[in-house]
Amino acid sequence: MSKGIGDFLIVDYSNPVDDWKDTILNAKQHLNNTVFNEGNIIDISPRIKAVVSGDVKVDDQLLSDVTEISLSSVFGDVTVNDFVENKSESFFGKFALVKVNRKTDTIKAYTDATRQVNLYFLSENGINAISTDLRLFSYISEFSKTVNTESIYHHLNFAYIPTPFSIYKNVTKLQPGTELTINKSAVNSRRYWQPQYQEDYNEPEHVLIEKLNSKIIETIEAYSTSSNDWGCFLSGGTDSSTITGVASKKVGGSNTSAYSIGFDEEGYDELEYAKIAAQSFGVNHFSTRIGATDTLDAIENLIKSYDEPFGNSSAIPTYYCAKLANDNGHSVLLGGDGGDEIFGGNERYSKDYYFNLFYSLPSPVKKLATLANKIIKPIDNRIINRINNYIYRASLQNPERFYTDDSFGSEYFDSMLTKDFRSTLDKNSSLNILHDHYADCHTSSELNKIMYIDLQMAIADNDLTKVNRAASAAGVSVLYPYLSPDLINFMGHIPNQYKVNKTKKRYLFKKAVKNILPIEIQQKKKQGFGLPVGEWFRTDKKYRELLTDTLLSQRCIERGYFNKNFISSLIYKHEKGTWDYTQELWLLLILELWHQEYVDA
Image (cartoon, rainbow, N blue to C red; front, side, top):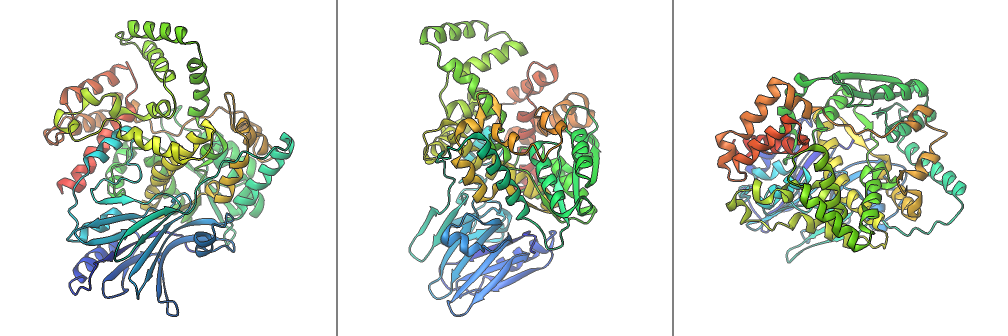
């Protein structure tokens, strides 16, 4: 079985060229310096060249004049070509596929259903190129490597750069389930696969419970390795615990290893629940705790592991957990990402119920509440701030309401951003991305529309980027059973009330996995898996110095993005405890450190 870890760069020079070797050789040297080992040069045609590394497979099909370059990890009988050509839903695994017709110089590139492998497309100065890593483009002399200021703004709102944008101008990210076609006359893309939300399963609840239980077990078991030696992330939550439980039942606890990470500070992890799950399933359990010093050591390494600014701090514990697995001989792990977004487990979905209660009130009542909100708004108090936030968000429709959960740049557009930076931006450009996804989901269900947004953004752009890059830095590949197309579309048939029943999240899922999970895991409250960096920003001397020395440095201010007084005020308010600005400060810190590594260097 291929791990599905590696990289490739394919360059279409538009015309036959002789001086391409420096570009490809430099890209090859870049790959030689990574965990992927030796890179290989592929001379596909007089105008199309490639360099590949790691588990990338190259298949020259002489009869059809096609060269296939793929990075994949596939389980079962359905191949990558079966899936992209027939949209078979019983596909298990991940891939990025590029087909080059050597006679016509036509390139077709494909991402898998949820884009578990990134593909970037560069079009500049007569050059078209496709790569799994942005940094490989930097070896192409025609690439200007100009930072896209609109992408900086998106990063401030989402803590990542959303598709189709990248950090650079003239480079886009391919969407999940996309076919990109490049030929001599045009570039076109289409979505060949998208989640469907029919909501047409009308059987009694007990029948749906049995069906979902069978579908979950069938999906997880499909990822069985030939060695029957399974490795799993185990946070202690319901998703990772379910995967670990199913794996242990299939191959036995002695053949299943689970990896967990915790923190020196209490209240930031579910390590105790991970131990309960591991003991219940009888698996080999490996865990460790990390603290402020460990994470400081990892920041520089992770900045170098991400090809764009990426502001999700849980990348650090993910890296340490993957490293723990690799140290114990596991280079492939199963992850529980995607469960919230298909089963209905995101806290934002239940919050939306309360927001809708306010939104459905008679207009006079809402106007009175809004007036009271304006009166108390100047009071800088944590409780008052929460009331203000609720009334403001509950007054909005979706997707605007959903957007305000992640809209730092928009919220402080005038006070945070310099006048010159603002002049290059459309304040609503980040919100417009959500509008596009919202409209692209063909269902009348508001819940399914915001779950669809999460699959496109919170999963494809955030979670998968986080886990894949962090794990890859530790030499580990990750597979995601819950993101199998068949399971996603199965849940699309399930009516809304079985996903989120008023404020009861994962209503059907919890009933479907009762026979898998120990009672303690079933009854626990959901807890996020976040780095205690907010506490360290307040109490740890080295973290405070890193924050202030980086964000208030002359070089950071000279970039022209931010007003220094705003940044100073944000740090002060966080230290004072008026509001928790952990996420905002972290993404600002990562953004500047990324510039120092990739722009200043």
